[in-house]
Amino acid sequence: MERTPARSETGPGNHELFRRPCDAIMTENSMIDEFLNYLKFERHFSPHTAKCYAADLAQFCGFLSGGSTGASAVAGGAARSDSYIAGGTLGAPGASTSATVTQPALRQKLCEVDTEKVKSFLAYLGMQNYSKSTIARKLATLRSFYKFCMRRGYVSEHPLASIRTPKQEKRLPKYLELDDITRLLNTPDSNTLLGARDRAMLEVLFSTGVRVSELVDLNFADIDFIGQTIRVRGKGKKQRTAPIGQTAIVAIQKYLELRRSDIRSAKFDQEALFVNKHGQRLSTRSVRRKLDKYLLQCGLDPTISPHTLRHSFATHMLNNGADLRSVQQLLGHQSISTTQVYTHLTTPRLKEAYDEAHPRS
Image (cartoon, rainbow, N blue to C red; front, side, top):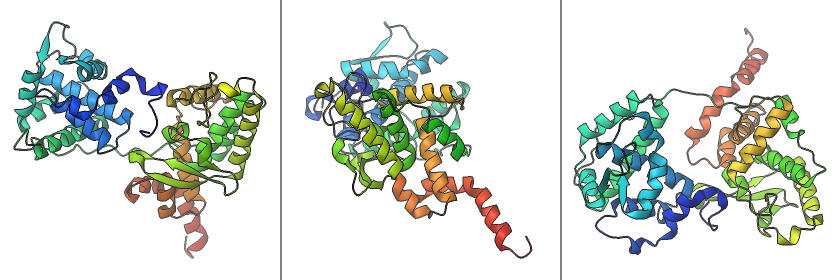
């Protein structure tokens, strides 16, 4: 979330990405820099999302510069995006460090891109066995970038205007049955400070369906213990109020009780709700590591992620009679079509209703 100072999980690349004011980099070589600052300051993209855009553009620039087209080129895209944004030249991904392209030359290559060049890039991605969803994301990055370039007058035609996004495989979200959720939530040792914190975090994730980025962004002031609601700062700085269950409230209170009794509590971040062992705001990566530990302890599928709890929240809400529009609002989805994917997971409930209600079932 962009409203707070950069936290540890954003990494040095993200700090560099948004440290400079826009007017400080409006030079003849700053077309991509301008775009990334536009994403941050006008579109309010999160640092993580903007960094993904930067990595996609870095890879595309490497392709245009004629660097190596091996698998190492792909792996180096994200890392090189940081060095590019920070300082003046972009090494072609996978090429030697001596093979650099000056920014004016790179700018010219970007402005001269046509439909055939984009198709060649897509063919390259296909040869590298990228999934359709990843290719679609990279296409979305290029569409957004060249739309921005057209508005700024850098290009006269959109090179992706006639290119269609590849049809993606329909993958149903993974979710946990209630028995498995109960096993997971009961695994942390609530008698210790860190165990109580982890139990509270898992309870909040399942009770509210918040994203893990929204979870770590929670502050003390966001919890209404009496009204049993939380204030969530979602994507694009959009805020929403979400109800939170009594079980999660009790878990938070237990964690806060142990936190206040800790002799180091005065040195903890006094704003953040969930902090690490050093008292600093917890990162999304740390939440994933904690979840991995508890999945191993209770014998559940190790591929389960914090987002699986969000999927589980939505699925169980619909299975128990919640309407789709309400679940959309609870999840913070901008479009109800995003929420509709969960209706595919509720087929057993519909079949049960059919069997009970239809006279010739």
